[in-house]
Length: 421
Image (cartoon, rainbow, N blue to C red):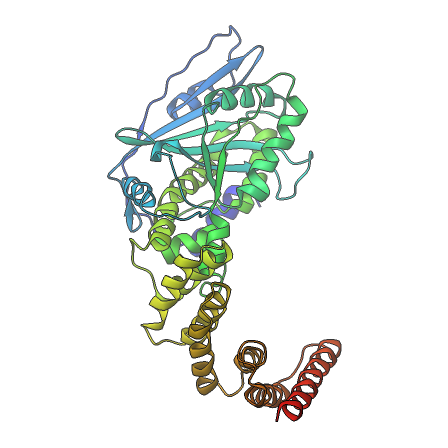
């Protein structure tokens, strides 16, 4: 069965359509070589041009979208507001633009001949979108044949030499390492790789939605969080097969779906960064779960004030996330000399959940080491041990270690109660 027939069979499984979007393409063919390129007429009609370097060339395609284009729940212009709102956040965060403008962000994705790393995997398309004065520019660089990598990277690296910040989805682990690998093979013939910052939105998606979405693939996040529904999208796993078929048959029309898929990816990155920024900065709607996960994110970054503020926001909702928020608040106040506040949260947690031994352990430590009240310390140690006994352990080794720790603490406290009574 041909690839085209496979795609036709897949259409009935595709998601709902994206609203019609008018795109403005600006094809401009520049042929500085006397050598004629293959399928020149097709590439011109497709809005693409050739970039020649020495005796080879790559294909370059540009598409322009007005800034007020609606993409799911957002317009592309909303990213300007998102970038501006970061300026009011006095905290380090992986998505913080700091002194960057929206135009400094390069939303980037690649299409490759396989999903594994290493020199055997070739990037055949580099795609990116960027905010310009009154439009979004999608720029795609295509490898017309395996021997054209020098022309491809020569154009791409000259084009991004002023790059300040990439925005990707799994780009830190896959896309950019692949670029670095391919660059290593041809570095004597092309410019050096630029230094830049990097926002990998996959990391944020995992933090915010790993417990609420069935998966954090970009297609799932697009549909569930951004309201972007694709129709007749060429699945990413078919891209390598289509590229190999193109190399064998020489029919560039096979790749139209791949170009479209890559184009949609780099456009959705704009609205995904907008959406995530609104959640983290508090300037967009966020669910209680998203507020809680954002608090955990700031806590992991050692941004205690922001984490405390967000956990307290969760407490006002009275949801199932109240108890874990109190536990986190107690731990944060303990680290910042707010033990009295921690004690209040631990006492509340004991009343709210008679299966959790951790608050009782913390209170036992507090009364032993801070208050020197060994009777209360023993009371909470015995309570913690009783609760612990009612829980199943994952491993016998850990169970034995915890059992010995409880026995040691209780024995020590019993001796001190006798000593100071």
